[in-house]
Each structure stands twice: as C-alpha cells, then as structure tokens.
Image (tube, rainbow over all chains, first blue to last red; front, side):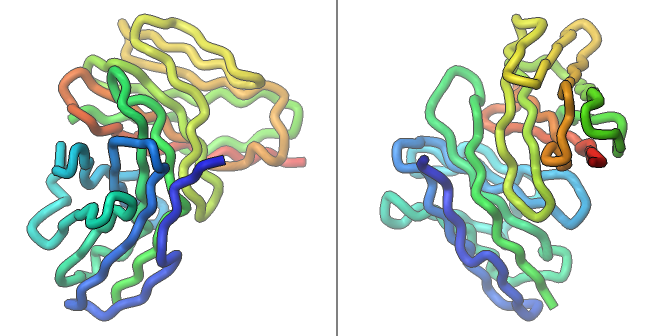
Length: 115
Length: 112
C-alpha cells in the first residue's frame, strides 16, 4: 500500500542550526502539507503546497520556515535557524485533489529536538 | 480560524464497552474527519462525514454530525485493547482554504 515516508525519524540539533526535514508523498497525490505536534499537544497546521507553490500557511510558518519540492518526488521543510520552541514532531501529509479537503495521508513523523 | 474541541480529554473503559468521543467546532464546514494516533506515530484517517450527512458507519465506527450544534461524535462499539490511542477530529472549513484544522484530541484507553 502506498505510504508517505519521512526522514529522519529523529534529529537532534543545536539552537541556531539549520534543519531540513524530508518527505516523499504518495506519488499520485497533488496536495502536500506539513503539520507539527509539540509533545502532548494538538496537531498544528504549518503549510500546504500545491502546483509547486504554497497555497496556504499559518502564523507559525514565519520567515524561518520554507518548503520546497525540488525534484517532483521529495517535499522538504527547512528551518533556517532553529529555536528551542521548534522542538516537536513534524508530520508530512499528502492527498489527492478533491472537492474540499479529503483524506490526508500522514507519514510517521520526524521528531526534532533543539538543544 | 475554527478549532475543533474534543471531549472528554481522556476516557478509560473496559474491553467490550462502547466509547463515545465528542467534537465541537466554531465555523461552517465542508466536512469533518476523525483521525487516530497511536503514541509516537502518525495520524491515520478513520472516517469522513460531509456537511450534508448526519450519520456514517464504518465497521465498528459510527460518526454523527449536527451542523446546527456544530458538533460531531465518534462511537467505537465493542472496544478492544488495540483501540487504545488518541482520537482527533479535523475540520475543513468553508473559508479555511486547503487546511484541515485538528482538535485537541481524546486519549482513549481500553483496558483488557
């Protein structure tokens, strides 16, 4: 069964360092997402991406964040200069095009720990 | 932006019992979805109910939607220990573009 894959599963970094989280969405999907979940809290929307551009972003997704789909398969989230509060689980998700937002398929997540 | 709020925050039941979780939201929606998350894992889609539907079934799951009260419920019948997980509702609002907005979640524990 097709699935969304994310790497790395866990990354530890020092505050101020750049981090890139990688995702391979399901191949025929058209919408791509990043969500984050701080430990024990709700799942928060960061950004959605369609047709090679950001379609929507939240207030969390500030200038320190960027997304890219460099080669038609990978979908990356970059955090330029990490802060302690960026420590969270980051989930990539994808979906097919549909009327309204249909089912999202999530990866297993990348846990980011900022020291 | 709208927010889904689940209650209870935590629910502990015995195997074989039914579990009911509720979700409320604030603005008009296109559809409402329920997701499950095992500890430390990704979210898995369970069921989607559209704004013009009132009830939907899938196996041991039953979802209701009351748009006049802006609320939904998820019923899991004949629960099993393997149903232990967090359950989240997520809404696709008429004005929220392409995003799904998740609620706070209900932590369900099913004791064997």
